[in-house]
Length: 438
Image 1 (cartoon, helix red, strand yellow):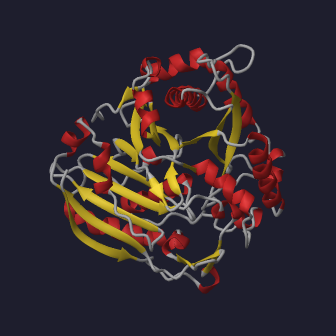
Image 2: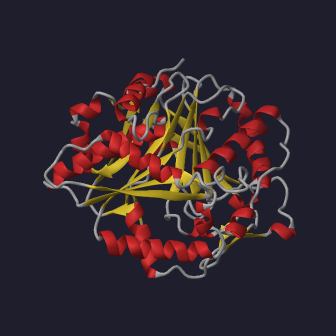
């Protein structure tokens, strides 16, 4: 797919950030995020004429007034964002193809042409028009200042301003997270090593793949993974996480010839609704990882799905009790996480790690600029960064015409190829099918 850059400019907040908001304090949970960008592309059909590009830019400028830290800069070694209104990068582009043609045979390797990255800015956007009138809006946000929830809040606010032509009542919260999880001037080596284990994996070549689970497949997985004694009715995310984890462990064993003694699952958990009191409007990173282990039998391929569902449910439930989250609050969070990292490394040594995050119910599929909701939400996975290869599974709703869920998997090439040939896995998963336009 050929794309032509038509313009590239900087969009700044419509109003200067007041002096008392010039320094935005990061929280500890911001500091421990990997040095990567969260990226997603929203696809729309039958969009408004090209002259309404100015409306998008004006609405973006007004949105940045509300999300003022995202238009700032981080000074090296600082725990503060300088909210100096430097702005975000905004690119307009033209794709030399029709959207319907691209969605009929989605080539994931071409998605990067719909996204602009500028390392010196926290945020960048690319608005790409297709020959048929469709549009793709690519958003890239540095993880230090944004999790997927914050990205969704930003995009929905931008869309609401563009559609309604009015500014929403400010309800954003940029202070509570740093008060609850104060930043640290120094991260010890044990914690840094643990975080590197969480996010990165050694290997020569990594592949990105997309698997779609329709509503019937999800119902079947929930039925198979349920257990009358542990989890009779698993959620969609619990069941899918367990299924994918199982078959990724089997793929790893097939590649290596044997299983690792311990396989670690880390699933990102949105803390906002789980804190007491809840912080639904907190921006930045208000997320931590639910961690559990599967002690594998080296010679056995018999991994019980319901057992994995039980492990996932059990670790999720530790985050549903507000009292348990007290360990993550205040200065105690730092001590708690350092001890957790040290104990994990000492107890389990070298483990296979599987990182998951769910963007389901975050509202990315609700972002309506005035021409309807997106027909497809596509995460864009960065295979590498300065610390090595990223490894992750992202779960996201599967388009406007489906009740299914997509799993975007980034893993080393050998394991991905095993997964693609796993007949049991493919009974439920459809590899990169067409995106239906309603």
